[in-house]
Amino acid sequence: MKLYQIPPRIWMEQDAFSRLPKEAKRLSASKAMIFAGPNIKKAGYVSATESGLDAEGISSQVFTDIEPEPSDNTALKAAQVMRGESPARIPFSPPTKLEMLVNLKNAGESRLVIPEALLRQAQQVTTPTTP
Image (cartoon, helix red, strand yellow):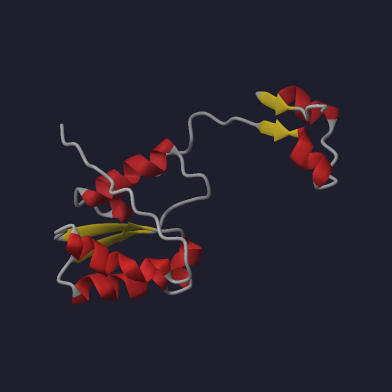
C-alpha cells in the first residue's frame, strides 16, 4: 500500500491554479494528474495548468469526465486512467445506488415547494429548526 500525503496549503485567490506548477516542482513531482470538470476545461484552466507543468518539466494527464458530486465509479475510472488505461476502453458503469436528500430549509428559502409524494421517496429529509 502507498501512502500519499496532501500538503496543507490552500490558496483562495484569483488565478490560484497558476500556483500549481511551481508548487508541484517544490514538492519534487515528476508527473501530475489533473482532475477537472468540463467547464473548467472549457474556461482554459486545464490547458494553462498543463502548459505550466510542462514548463517545469512535469508530465501531466488530464481527467475531465467528472460529474457534479462525483460518484465512486468516477473515482475508480480516474484511477484506471492514471494506471494507463484509455478512457474510451473503460466501460460505462451507472451508479448502483441513488439517494434523494431534501433540505426543507433551503427549499423554503428558494421558494420551492416539494410535493409530499417526493418527500415520501426521499431517504433523508432535513427540516428547519425553530430557535
